[in-house]
Image 1 (tube, rainbow, N blue to C red):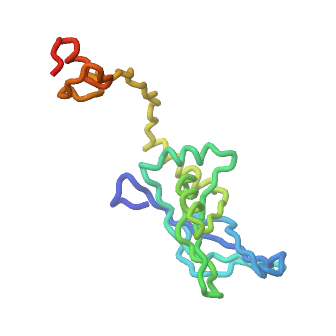
Image 2: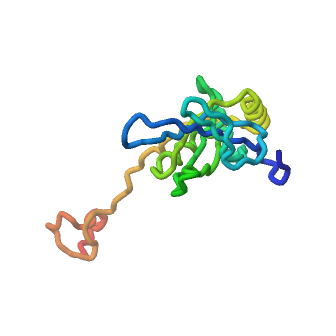
Image 3: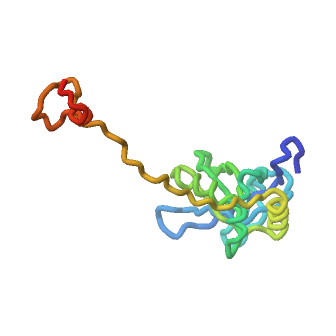
Length: 188
Protein backbone atom coordinates (compact mmCIF):
# COMPACT_ATOMS: atom_id res chain seq x y z
CA UNK A 1 0.00 0.00 0.00
CA UNK A 2 1.22 3.53 -0.64
CA UNK A 3 0.97 6.64 1.53
CA UNK A 4 1.43 9.66 -0.80
CA UNK A 5 -2.24 9.80 -1.84
CA UNK A 6 -4.43 9.31 1.20
CA UNK A 7 -7.51 8.90 -0.97
CA UNK A 8 -5.91 6.12 -3.06
CA UNK A 9 -4.48 2.73 -2.16
CA UNK A 10 -2.39 0.45 -4.32
CA UNK A 11 -1.65 -3.26 -4.33
CA UNK A 12 0.70 -4.98 -6.81
CA UNK A 13 -1.00 -7.75 -8.76
CA UNK A 14 0.59 -10.20 -11.15
CA UNK A 15 -1.25 -10.91 -14.38
CA UNK A 16 -1.39 -14.49 -15.68
CA UNK A 17 -2.18 -15.01 -19.37
CA UNK A 18 -2.88 -18.38 -20.95
CA UNK A 19 -1.70 -19.28 -24.45
CA UNK A 20 -3.71 -22.05 -26.10
CA UNK A 21 -3.99 -23.34 -29.66
CA UNK A 22 -6.58 -21.64 -31.85
CA UNK A 23 -9.60 -23.53 -33.14
CA UNK A 24 -9.74 -21.88 -36.56
CA UNK A 25 -7.19 -21.48 -39.32
CA UNK A 26 -7.32 -17.68 -38.86
CA UNK A 27 -6.36 -17.77 -35.19
CA UNK A 28 -3.35 -20.01 -34.65
CA UNK A 29 -3.02 -18.98 -30.98
CA UNK A 30 -5.52 -17.64 -28.44
CA UNK A 31 -4.42 -15.52 -25.48
CA UNK A 32 -6.68 -15.19 -22.47
CA UNK A 33 -6.33 -13.71 -18.98
CA UNK A 34 -6.70 -16.44 -16.40
CA UNK A 35 -6.08 -14.91 -12.98
CA UNK A 36 -4.25 -12.31 -10.94
CA UNK A 37 -1.66 -12.93 -8.25
CA UNK A 38 -2.08 -10.41 -5.37
CA UNK A 39 1.19 -9.09 -3.97
CA UNK A 40 3.26 -10.69 -6.73
CA UNK A 41 6.89 -9.85 -7.39
CA UNK A 42 7.85 -8.21 -10.71
CA UNK A 43 7.90 -10.58 -13.68
CA UNK A 44 8.54 -10.45 -17.39
CA UNK A 45 6.73 -13.23 -19.28
CA UNK A 46 7.75 -15.91 -16.81
CA UNK A 47 6.50 -19.36 -17.87
CA UNK A 48 4.52 -20.88 -14.99
CA UNK A 49 3.41 -24.19 -16.53
CA UNK A 50 2.83 -26.01 -19.81
CA UNK A 51 0.40 -28.85 -20.31
CA UNK A 52 -0.95 -30.27 -23.57
CA UNK A 53 -0.02 -27.28 -25.71
CA UNK A 54 -1.49 -24.81 -23.19
CA UNK A 55 0.95 -22.51 -21.40
CA UNK A 56 0.42 -20.08 -18.52
CA UNK A 57 2.66 -17.01 -18.23
CA UNK A 58 3.11 -14.53 -15.40
CA UNK A 59 3.30 -11.66 -17.86
CA UNK A 60 3.86 -8.68 -15.57
CA UNK A 61 3.03 -7.16 -12.22
CA UNK A 62 1.07 -3.91 -12.27
CA UNK A 63 -0.47 -1.81 -9.52
CA UNK A 64 -4.18 -2.18 -8.76
CA UNK A 65 -5.13 1.28 -7.51
CA UNK A 66 -8.34 2.14 -5.72
CA UNK A 67 -9.57 5.75 -5.78
CA UNK A 68 -12.04 7.37 -3.40
CA UNK A 69 -13.89 8.95 -6.33
CA UNK A 70 -14.62 5.48 -7.81
CA UNK A 71 -16.16 3.80 -4.76
CA UNK A 72 -19.61 3.70 -6.38
CA UNK A 73 -18.14 1.59 -9.20
CA UNK A 74 -16.44 -0.72 -6.68
CA UNK A 75 -19.74 -1.19 -4.83
CA UNK A 76 -21.36 -2.12 -8.15
CA UNK A 77 -18.55 -4.57 -8.95
CA UNK A 78 -18.62 -6.20 -5.50
CA UNK A 79 -22.40 -6.68 -5.74
CA UNK A 80 -22.07 -8.82 -8.89
CA UNK A 81 -22.75 -12.56 -8.70
CA UNK A 82 -19.04 -13.14 -9.35
CA UNK A 83 -16.93 -10.11 -8.35
CA UNK A 84 -14.21 -9.57 -10.96
CA UNK A 85 -11.14 -7.57 -11.83
CA UNK A 86 -10.60 -6.29 -15.34
CA UNK A 87 -7.30 -6.61 -17.19
CA UNK A 88 -6.76 -4.14 -20.02
CA UNK A 89 -4.31 -5.32 -22.71
CA UNK A 90 -3.08 -4.01 -26.05
CA UNK A 91 -1.69 -6.01 -28.92
CA UNK A 92 1.95 -5.51 -29.84
CA UNK A 93 4.00 -6.41 -32.92
CA UNK A 94 6.46 -8.49 -30.87
CA UNK A 95 5.88 -12.22 -31.43
CA UNK A 96 7.49 -13.12 -28.09
CA UNK A 97 5.30 -10.66 -26.17
CA UNK A 98 2.09 -10.34 -28.20
CA UNK A 99 0.14 -8.49 -25.49
CA UNK A 100 1.05 -5.53 -23.33
CA UNK A 101 -0.85 -5.24 -20.04
CA UNK A 102 -1.90 -1.61 -19.67
CA UNK A 103 -3.59 -1.84 -16.29
CA UNK A 104 -5.77 -3.81 -13.90
CA UNK A 105 -8.89 -2.19 -12.46
CA UNK A 106 -11.70 -3.12 -10.09
CA UNK A 107 -14.06 -0.58 -11.66
CA UNK A 108 -16.54 -2.05 -14.15
CA UNK A 109 -17.22 1.51 -15.37
CA UNK A 110 -13.55 2.07 -16.25
CA UNK A 111 -13.39 -1.33 -17.96
CA UNK A 112 -16.42 -0.37 -20.04
CA UNK A 113 -14.67 2.84 -21.12
CA UNK A 114 -11.65 0.85 -22.31
CA UNK A 115 -13.76 -1.72 -24.14
CA UNK A 116 -15.69 1.05 -25.94
CA UNK A 117 -12.59 2.44 -27.67
CA UNK A 118 -12.20 -0.71 -29.81
CA UNK A 119 -8.41 -0.79 -29.58
CA UNK A 120 -7.97 -2.43 -26.20
CA UNK A 121 -8.70 -5.97 -25.07
CA UNK A 122 -10.57 -6.14 -21.76
CA UNK A 123 -10.41 -9.48 -19.96
CA UNK A 124 -12.48 -10.26 -16.89
CA UNK A 125 -11.04 -12.48 -14.14
CA UNK A 126 -12.51 -13.52 -10.82
CA UNK A 127 -11.31 -11.63 -7.73
CA UNK A 128 -9.30 -13.61 -5.25
CA UNK A 129 -10.65 -13.62 -1.68
CA UNK A 130 -7.68 -11.47 -0.56
CA UNK A 131 -8.39 -8.77 -3.16
CA UNK A 132 -12.13 -8.93 -2.44
CA UNK A 133 -11.52 -8.33 1.28
CA UNK A 134 -9.11 -5.46 0.52
CA UNK A 135 -11.57 -3.70 -1.82
CA UNK A 136 -14.47 -4.27 0.60
CA UNK A 137 -12.49 -2.68 3.44
CA UNK A 138 -11.60 0.28 1.22
CA UNK A 139 -15.25 0.78 0.24
CA UNK A 140 -16.39 0.60 3.87
CA UNK A 141 -13.87 3.27 4.81
CA UNK A 142 -14.32 5.69 1.90
CA UNK A 143 -17.75 5.21 0.29
CA UNK A 144 -20.39 7.83 0.99
CA UNK A 145 -23.85 7.03 -0.29
CA UNK A 146 -25.37 9.93 -2.16
CA UNK A 147 -29.04 10.53 -1.53
CA UNK A 148 -31.14 10.67 -4.66
CA UNK A 149 -32.71 14.06 -5.16
CA UNK A 150 -35.34 14.27 -7.83
CA UNK A 151 -35.10 17.47 -9.76
CA UNK A 152 -38.37 19.34 -9.97
CA UNK A 153 -39.34 21.47 -12.86
CA UNK A 154 -39.94 25.13 -12.37
CA UNK A 155 -43.49 26.15 -13.16
CA UNK A 156 -43.64 27.51 -16.64
CA UNK A 157 -44.41 31.20 -16.78
CA UNK A 158 -45.68 32.46 -20.09
CA UNK A 159 -43.58 35.51 -20.90
CA UNK A 160 -45.63 38.67 -20.94
CA UNK A 161 -45.74 40.02 -24.40
CA UNK A 162 -46.45 43.58 -25.24
CA UNK A 163 -47.44 42.73 -28.77
CA UNK A 164 -45.73 41.41 -31.79
CA UNK A 165 -45.44 44.53 -33.89
CA UNK A 166 -43.49 47.73 -33.57
CA UNK A 167 -45.21 50.39 -31.46
CA UNK A 168 -43.70 53.12 -33.61
CA UNK A 169 -45.82 52.11 -36.60
CA UNK A 170 -49.10 54.06 -36.68
CA UNK A 171 -51.60 51.82 -38.43
CA UNK A 172 -55.06 51.19 -37.06
CA UNK A 173 -55.53 47.97 -39.01
CA UNK A 174 -52.13 46.47 -38.21
CA UNK A 175 -52.70 43.15 -36.47
CA UNK A 176 -49.09 43.06 -35.37
CA UNK A 177 -49.04 46.46 -33.65
CA UNK A 178 -48.25 46.62 -30.00
CA UNK A 179 -51.51 46.34 -28.02
CA UNK A 180 -50.38 48.74 -25.31
CA UNK A 181 -50.56 51.70 -27.72
CA UNK A 182 -54.11 50.77 -28.71
CA UNK A 183 -55.27 50.53 -25.09
CA UNK A 184 -53.79 53.86 -24.12
CA UNK A 185 -55.55 55.56 -26.99
CA UNK A 186 -52.50 56.77 -28.82
CA UNK A 187 -51.95 55.49 -32.32
CA UNK A 188 -48.52 56.88 -32.70
